[in-house]
Image (cartoon, protein in one colour):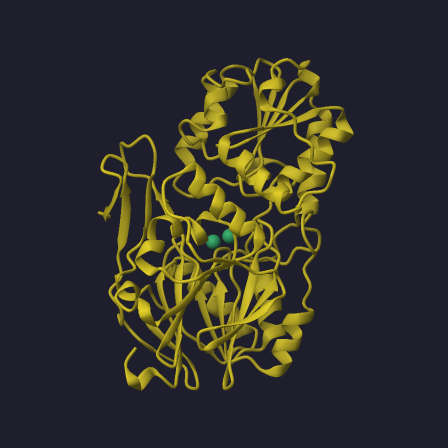
Length: 454
Ligand SMILES: [Zn+2]
Ligand SMILES: [Zn+2]
């Protein structure tokens, strides 16, 4: 940072601004930087079986790493921590994460390639510490994976709030319900700028709660007679807990199919996030049970090649075989770009007379997004009352929609931009376009090295 910036508080996204995925944010003040999140994105290259793992090019901050005081992980999703094992060696700074996110990071570096940060500091939600020039407070916020925290980032002259990914969930199943108390206090003290999740900003209304999904899943599963397998995102620990409760209620045994889901469940159990009734049986025992006693939770709801649901479709799963009369429930939404692979999965299963019920077209609520719709965004802006709002975590149209909600909610100034733009947060809002060089790296399986993404 040059001298003219040292009295300002600035924000510089190197990933995740103008796109959904590979989040990497920098907050700067007094010639020091603090990074927030370090994620990957999965890019489906036409013709390839599996998507490629891509992540932001961190050359800008790697060249200044003596000015980098630390990196904070807001939550355990791949688009927020998945690149750390690949990129931490370029940064070599202390990494701060909640116990669950730290467990996930350890699990990933054990089961995959990459390096675990040698300085991994666990922070309990609610804690406050100083990182570089900033006082940071981890404020619990509801989202689709446990222990997600918004960050209050302050200096004696400025107050910034980074929302992380969030929604308002009164019944999140795992973890505490949404509470506006701390956000109201901060809003009353005065906030200069809010950096906010834009993923669902084009959707009116509010996202349903995990509790409502539990009701929908229970109604559907109670009607099923054969085996039931529910596909969901592997990081959605609350959804797995919901299925454990439904298994108990319906006389079924829960088995976790898929390495990433099993790993997530294990991490959540390790740090004590799941209640005692979360007792999945070993997946290999599922195949020996009467069909009416089987409840599987499986990875691969996007139709990913080689994931558990795909293997169940092509009858190569080592632990379980589905037959006519069984049911597969897709408790997830189809991510744009995955329509064809999801359709192939559905048709392949239906072709074998397996019933498929998808959250995308079911009357019951079978999936809830982890991101705020317009009603939730308006609520948070009205609680926080910031001078400035900067939408991130979205493509240009999502960020524009988020900025509109902010203005309608009484926020005076909104700024939208792209990766590499330098935003001035305090004392005076502003933006310097294309301040830092940005780009994408891609993990090359053959050479086991990072290369420039095309
Ligand atoms: Zn995210
Ligand atoms: Zn997330």
